[in-house]
Length: 399
Image (cartoon, rainbow, N blue to C red; front, side, top):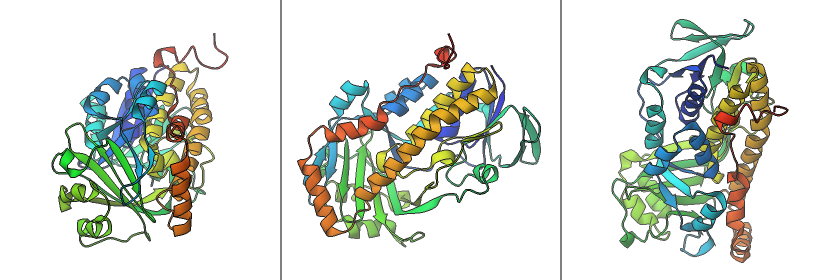
């Protein structure tokens, strides 16, 4: 089964969806409303489930080659003591792949490279969709009206299409946390105290984390409990004030960062789960469907899962309607469960501020068996996509 599709949004989820649709024979246009592709963002970690989705989309090898595996690290306290260690080698044995870290800009570049240049329309804003015609969707885009068999709404946490499809949904809400992040200007050497591929440090209502990248630089993030909308005249100076006495390599990471490279965003999420991820021939994907807090590192991975499942469902058919029903049945329960788990992880991790509660949490983590951290990651990362060439055979009830 093939057809024509318009993917609204040229981020990770939208590009991955376009790749999957093209692999099963669809004609795809990606409409990105930004006039310039600046690839804003620092870096992300990809767990086994996200990498497996990339594998079935045909870009997993290229992403792994550009990424750095995360074998060592864990969670610490501001003074430097360890709360829990991460055994990346054990994760690799269990899942077949370690967690990897990659700059967002590089991931975007690799995904775009898997598509013909003419697929991507930059500066193309989709203002409306018309679902009144049976079996088709008309898309108003840049003064032009296009007709397609499918529209994929991958337009982010503040999705305009979601608001159109589900006008009674309250939309995203502020999580109570804000994040500042950057990639260091220069590589970080061992003299800075950086001996781990990945670290999180929890204080009271604050978290500082970093991942090492393939070129020796590091991506760091600082998450703070904060009212929405608070901004600092000099964000880097504020972070040095707050985190300057925390253990190395935190001060070294901040010292290796240019002020103009610091990004600052409030974290919003969809607390009220959507009642459906589809409406007629429009399908929600990624943050538009299940925006979640970053506490489990699963936001991008869930979008990649969406893309792989959507392609597999459409390849299996027998109709677009049946495929979208399958997509909704598979993706909505899983992604909403991961979103709930991420919210809970944030409340027990970065957002926890009461000193007694923090002390109890820390004591519990120190006493927990060494496999607890690995088990927590496995709970969400142990996911297997259907290979696209076998998707039809795996349709429930098929032979």
